[in-house]
Image (cartoon, rainbow, N blue to C red; front, side, top):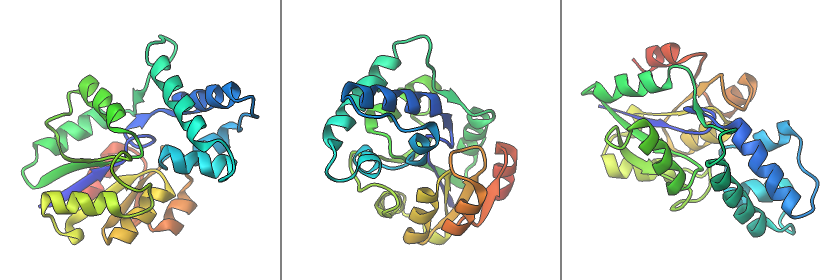
Amino acid sequence: MKLIIFDIDGTLVDSQDFIVEAQRRAFTAHGMSVPDRETSLSIVGLSLTEAFTTLVGTKGPVASLADAYRSAWHEMREEATFAEALYPGALEAVAELAQREDIVLGIATGKAKRGVKHLFDRCGWHKHFATVQTSDDHPSKPAPDMILAALHETGIDPASTYMIGDTTYDMQMARAAGVHGLGVAWGYHPHDQLRDAGAEAIAHDFNELLALIA
């Protein structure tokens, strides 16, 4: 039995426009300079507290920025201009893996439970994922806690577990937890950084990812 754990933002969902705009609104509300797009996306995968600490330092208004970001995110969900699009092939890949008797699916994400529920409601994924770990209950990536909790919940061995993600934080988390790390090329961190962080292989589309898992 294999445990396949997916990251969400940058791996299953192309949320970059959401993330950049929500950050812009949060910084603007505080009268602060808005990070450029590359900087904004560099912190994807971290919990909000860790992300804003990285962006403004420990002396900045981290908690207030995180609250403003959450508010902006929820407001944008009601705006027709913005949509969290799944990457091409994501829906089909999850459906195919969910049907296999030798595979258990999991989630490890910097999103809050509320965001995961919204995604699962939209995609019909509630029955597909046996374990869901979020930033509400665990330290931020790259701490291994989310994966360790998934291993405990499913009873699957680390040697048979794969973390799928687009950032160095995902690969570092996988390495810290003693599981396999597989990177994806369509997310927010470049190939060389994923390799250096411990990615055993990097998929360029979901068909290649399915082949790597097989």
